[in-house]
Length: 330
Image (cartoon, rainbow, N blue to C red; front, side, top):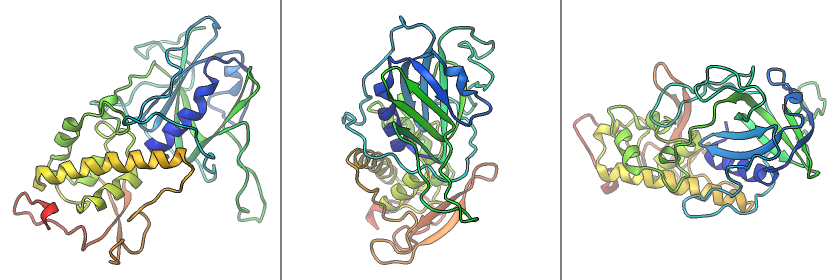
């Protein structure tokens, strides 16, 4: 699914429509009927990690909570480039709860809920939670087009899940995503890797656990917005083997890993707004920048998601079990 930088870009694309009324709807969504949005006002747009939250309200008079782009590591979001292609099948993902909690937040496709997520809200403000699939995207005033023929040789354009036309004359098209009404989002910037309030101490404490660091990095409770690409790149640049136990790594190695997580994520976001290609050193590569053969294997906790991982055995040596080591001195 799109990682933090991509969802921040989607937020930037949606923000200009805040304060406008939905005048026409469309899309293929069956669980959340597009007609539900007819005549609602988009009052706010917020992003947390890999999720986008949109607030709708039937009342024109309600003031939006925020209409300003969110600061990202000291950098205000600039004009976005072209949206990413929206091709490929839908992807399912389990909703993850707020920072510090492993429990999923309450959500439903049947209707909006109150703050406790227990009973429907009738004719009141509604928060839409959007979770994007692997090729999820948002298009503005345009639709995604087929980039290649299918197995039958037919060129068929992707069908948007939801299309919202606004009173200002423009429209948004949502592709390959899951949408559900939810309680007002609990935004925890301390675990968002692209927030100025990202809590390094909390992240370092999580990484120091006696489990492979590649598992911890994908834990959205501590690294919200971090996905498989950022995981692979940060581990390579910090010269840490993916299966290294955090408890065996020195404080300086863990500090370096967090530095590379934030640096790569911020650079990736900046490149998106400047229309540049994402630059990776190890992800989906056959050789690392030093010319070594790259290894690829699926790693993940026994009861969790297994993800493909790329690493260089020479640049990221496997640690022994003798005790803490400082990889930066190797």
